[in-house]
Length: 105
Image (cartoon, rainbow, N blue to C red):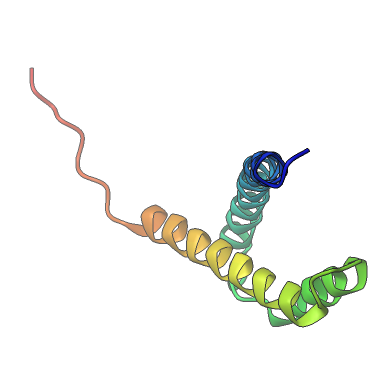
């Protein structure tokens, strides 16, 4: 395979992997939203530092490389930040006053 063909094939593979990553990130976010709803119902804070540490420790531990542990941790810190932001948006929407129903007769 020529270098341009190999590069095209590798880029196609990256595109396919990116599509899988997007799907997985959205599936993870959906789980985080469900957890956020449970937290809201029981009055638990969104930010749980012990859980965040456990997640970062876990992903470092299962990381085979070539990304090093610090790189994986930075990526997951960002993923966790976005999940927490999403939880806050949903909680704020739940707390927003709702308009009175339209009673046109």
